[in-house]
Length: 411
Image 1 (cartoon, rainbow, N blue to C red):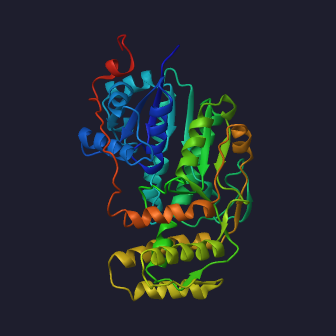
Image 2: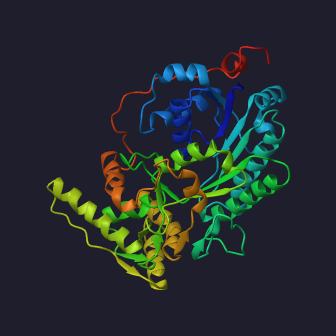
């Protein structure tokens, strides 16, 4: 039986690390090559080890897993051949049997040119690499449900460019990237699939996260008592999914031949999404419970949701009058979130549900684990201090040991 070798990008990121963790813990027959950008090979290795250490569940005998099944290669997806030598690049192509491309920039404030350089340019390099692999069995690209841009209403998995506008350069660059992958699917790159997560939050079991962006910004500002007005529509649904659900779905569907040629929404769906009004009210409730448990007299009031330009103008004025610093930076990030409170989307996930039938893998409504998300934020001071946990012992190999890692026979 041919050895499974997964070529994974984005392994040092929030989602990529969770996927890597699952492969190492649950797929003993699979070896992994992680392409990670670093100032040195050592730094690239340390980034992955650190990210693995922040996953929710520790690995069984991680030192042994790292020795035998994981190779971390210092490279850059935006460079020709990832910046690797022709020999190393060719060896990686000869060993790789599957590709999972998670790496991307998720920043909303980049110029379109800079967003394209990573998301579009990086994926072009991945597709070029894939076409040269001798034994490629499957390829998956992680996109975003928000390639839907400024659309409202029902968004289907088989829809992409229907003339929508975009709320930021991230959305536009991801749509352009997904179009590249779809074109590759139709022009000779077989066994390919696309995953579109919605807003990814921390683990639904313990709240753990390594990033405090997007919805975390308004939640943090609520706690500071600095948001009294929220621009938006009270009924707009916020489609939120926990990272453990997204990683579990990707790992499960990636193995299915029935997934080839399809796109999958990894979303809460209309019935599990949380209305903006409920999100604001529940967030304030959790804060007040937290204050009471600590014996603090402080109580927050529920911010008013204003469905017109007055709310945006109020926010802009607050930012302009605020001195530079951490709070202003939070407000500026919050500003990028506001467009998502204006557009009511209902993501259809029929493809995903069909392939998950009988697995027991389902998204949990955000209302059911929002308190865990905020509790983790409180315990870690919003990421400024790590929660105590067992240290992750890990050793990784040197780049030149491809033969020892992946095959006992000569390359």
